[in-house]
Amino acid sequence: MKKRELANTDKKSICKSVLESLIKDPDKFQFGRTKIFFRVGQVAYLEKLRADKFREVTIMIQKIVRGWLQKAKYRRLKAAALTLQRCYQGHLTLRLAEHLRRTRAAIVFQKQYRMQRAHLAYRRVCRAMVIIQSFILAMFVQRNFRQVLKEHKATIIQNYLHTCHGGGEAEEGNGTLPAESGNNTSLQLQEEVQSLCSELQKAQSDRRVLEDAHSRENGELRK
Image (cartoon, rainbow, N blue to C red; front, side, top):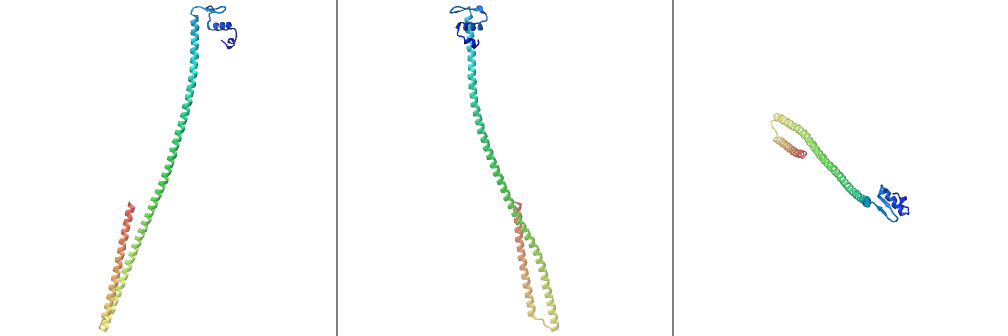
């Protein structure tokens, strides 16, 4: 049936067109003046066609409604998924930013700690170098002091020998040796020897102090 045929105002012609389109055999129905006469089973056949058409239309309506509902549900799920993704991505971005801040803080802390350790190591090395230099200088000073002490002792002994030799010649020439001059010379010699001994002890004590300081510095460097 076409809409143009249904638009006709003649009800008989409309019914005739509908029946001809539904029932192919024209012997199965007959038009009267006010009624339509069907053979046996044709009314049930028309009812079946109507029920099938209603079922098709109902299925179509259900399909359209379910499709609309599923589309609405899909839109809601899509909006919720986008919201969740946006929130999760924001959470991941915040975690990444926090990780980057902590990593930078750790790098700065490591840099400062390493710089402090390097500075302390440099100061220990400088102190060790100063102690070593002072120890070496003290060793050279002690060596020079011993050399000067030996030369001074040799000079005193030579002077004493010259004095004794000159006093013996005077005793042989004059027959007497002045006792006071010999006593004064021996006292001066004893004083010189005592002063040299005290200086030597002082130098040895200074050397022990330097050796102790050097050993302590070596212990700190080993730690």
